[in-house]
Image 1 (cartoon, rainbow, N blue to C red):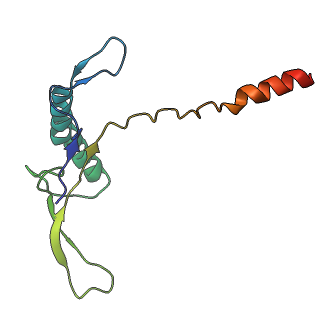
Image 2 (image 1 turned 180 degrees about the vertical axis):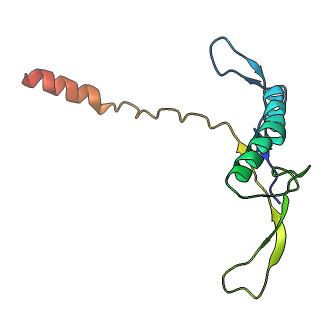
Image 3 (image 1 turned 120 degrees about the vertical axis):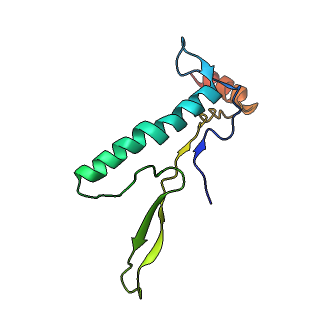
Length: 119
């Protein structure tokens, strides 16, 4: 079972810097993101679903943890299948790819000299 993943390749004491003047530990960022998903985003999701007429009874239930009890009836199935709807979140750092430059060929100097002579 995949769990939510918030910067899994980094330790709590590693440092994140989103700008030239800001810096904070990854553990603080991870904790704040988890709290946001458990609290603010989950409440907003419940509100959006309710406003759209999709009522899930989610009192003290967790979309981002244990999941929400649900049943699904697939076309062609013999009956309802019970289970849970879960939202899994991955927050990761994706390093920029370093520029790959081709090493200069020893023949480049010879080519330049030939071109200079021709000019």
